[in-house]
Length: 90
Image 1 (cartoon, one colour):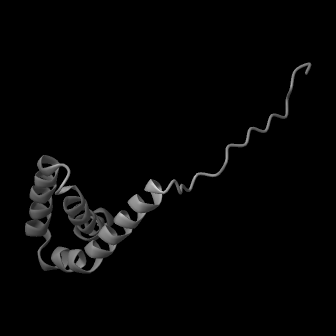
Image 2: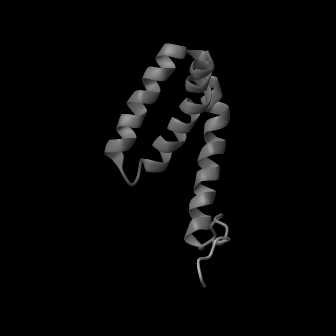
């Protein structure tokens, strides 16, 4: 049941955001995403569309914001720390 709720709501909104993001750069993939999203919406009906209308634009906005951050060199990875406790004859 939880998987169906994710598919109906969050995944459908994510697919909408992906479709919009890829429309200009990769139209073939955007078209496949569109078809998948339409199948999900025809299966789950109005609930899937309503969640997409509300959540989809927010996800699109946040992905565009993330692209801009990455272009400026801002990442979320912490610095790598190597902590060795069992050194042999150093």
